Length: 519
Image (cartoon, rainbow, N blue to C red; front, side, top):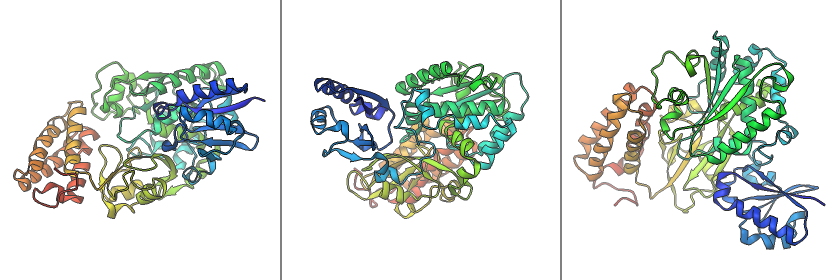
């Protein structure tokens, strides 16, 4: 009897020894004369349980984790291959509470399928969205995206349907679809997980976008720090071409869509769409002034649809199940689901896909289990290094674009980083300025010079040098950066700075009640 074991190839799992576990499983099975096939999947996102090994049984999959090479012999002796009992046995992975509570629309196949197999993707419902799209005209596809309420998941939250419609209506000899996969925000990993675990979901979404907008060529701009995703995407694209889901005749429709993956240059600023396009064209990643917008004049001066990985990967579900089915999730003007990435000082960090409206407290306590240190939560940063810091009394704020904006925060790419009561918020504010100074493209003065002056002034505040006057300078500097910066790099840097000063003023006044970690 052939036995199938599933071992993740996700970067986190690899870092925790998944390759060594896979080798040990194969060797152990061979010694026991077992006919074992090992399928390397992505991760389901329960990162504290990685590497999580699953075995296929007649009753369904059974999971074990976290597994080390030293555990393998004992697991095999406990009849792992039939789902036998062991201290590491987790049972049906779909019933693990962390996973069972989620709304997995976009990540439903991640950790389940062989990432580079078109056949496995289709066996688990893949390409039904594209098949549905091919039965519609371009306007019908765009209408479905618009009616779903899908907004850009890269951080800006701009309605995807409006952007798609603009590119669709533009007249040009060549149009392009570009995926912004330069995932650089601290505490974010959803894009990487998707590209490593279910790349055909992204490929399908981009193909639908190409057919809807009239673009026959697409590019995935991938951050250079993702070598596993790069290799997986290249293999998946090659297999897609062989299977006829990419190329000159997509699924026999007579429509063409060609896709390439391009490795980025290692700059955070290339997560900004115009800087990304500059880099994609072979130049230094520097922000372009707008207008013209990329939808009208983007890559090589042609109409270009630029969306984030999570935006494109929501599209197959929408086309397969209908705009209404997607819009039933969420609240207000924030419809559908969000890929929440829980990191920092947290007991159970990982990927959570959930409808908009869940509160920060529910995410941190019910999913995350509180801090890893066991100390009280003091601050939570939402939306990456340019996101606001939330204190305990704001943790009941729902994750919703408008609700977060009302508290002077942002959803961003859905990254949540947790800090306990040992954090020094003055140092965190200084870091925001320092990060901006290092990562600025240098094109505009408020960002380039403002961030450097911010570091210098914050150093004076931390040293206790005329703190009140220097905090006033910081406030003025933040106003200039917010109003005068060319893009969000400088324009949003004041958000973490001012939220830290507003909610944790004691850390900025020498002689006041400093945090536990202050020196």
